[in-house]
Image: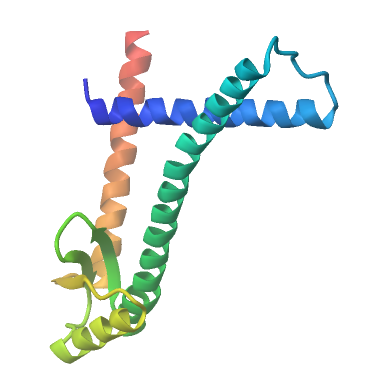
Length: 177
């Protein structure tokens, strides 16, 4: 019932249909298959204009979406290399980081453990983002008071609990059979 999902799925279907047709037409032209003969030039021009219109109508949004994905990946790489990796180099452990592009200004939330990052360091990160053409990001750093050993211990406990639950589920499955 969500029209955005339906629209996205239908657009994906349309892109596939148009570009599969274009590839088929290109191969048929390359192999020199005989083209369809039209009764008159008016019909041929109408069919050609319809095909070119469909191609352009699917190509323009595709280029926009490709540019958006490229831009988002570039921003993510810059943030990762100049902020996230710098925090890690200072002896901290990054627990999670995420970009919220839907907020204004955009936010980068970084959850880390280790040494506290002071305001001058945070200002340096912001200047670095400005120098890489990312002026509208607000950095939000959240320090979690956990050491690396505590994180590793929590990870081991979570893994053990998962394995225990899998064993219990497997035993229950064999008992019900």
